[in-house]
Image 1 (cartoon, rainbow, N blue to C red):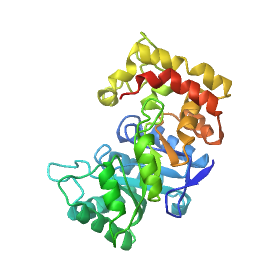
Image 2 (cartoon, one colour):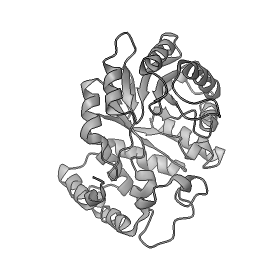
Image 3 (cartoon, one colour):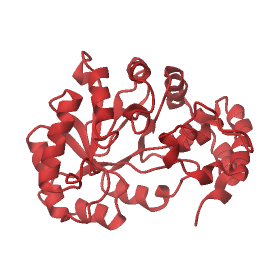
Length: 316
């Protein structure tokens, strides 16, 4: 498993990382989720991503159980703060950061997290308060580095230019062949400030695996058909024309000697500012297939052909 540096930090993260957004917060059985985590570790995936709001603590609790007995220095653990945990608990205030971090550490059964990320920007809390609180938990040793997810450009820049605070080293945007938008402005801005990307949904919630077929019933074991996961599945990604375009990517992947998921992941990893692509897996076999993408390199010509096929579905 190849590794890349995470921003201006001393963390070397695997090019493929394992997430827990929908799958490990109740989407699949616990035993299967733990098997996926252990398989990832066996394959050299050292970066594990979660958030307090995933299942309101359920995903963190599962990871804490799955990692019990594993050498803490052998993996890099990331979680997030901001999401609504109760009617009174949400946001990036000093009080919330301190409270939610301690609860996350308890669920994860660890004394520290390697990366603590602001899940979204909090418009109700001054940026200075958020950055000072994050800096304090780093100095306390509870957090090694900090990052953010889906922040506005001006807030990224404002935080990066703030004095006497710990700087961000990572950004976590949605990024895939069907959602390429961050590469235009976010990636270059982050590069200027020593921030690299940990991208989520690089397979467009499974659409770029090719499992969804035009005018066909949804697979019964898919996210789109799941009772809870399907509620937030982008319906426009299931439109027949788009699914037909995704099918046209399969021959390109075969030409590169890859499966379609591996090809889609390789497209994401072609970007130097991307440190890792977060996959979500419901079965160990999926982890194994996706992990193989870390060693694959594809010609620019094949990627250009892929972009010409799906580019008409890009917005704006």
